[in-house]
Image (cartoon, rainbow, N blue to C red):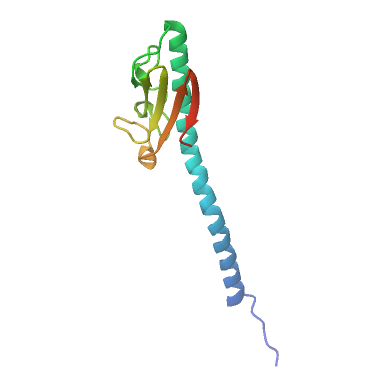
Length: 139
């Protein structure tokens, strides 16, 4: 009597494949989440850099820095110049203390129009200046 062997996979083979997929997922998911956080921080960092540049140009043209306020309050800067995926123009502000500035990007602030603003709620990225040179903080 001849016995016919099935061409399917055994339970052990399927379990091995499942374990391999689970291990790959356990490694890949945290890496992807870290990349997403880095993208959020990079957008805020870039926006703070744009504010810093605008403040420097303003100071060069006018001989002084503007008073505290939102980025859009700097003369010549449009209201939507910093609109991005996670942060928008209302999220960026600057304060002056003597000759030093602090530029802040605050996630999900009032008036934000960023499509994914809720994902950066509570996130704060800052640039601070000391003696006219900006130092990065918050990443």
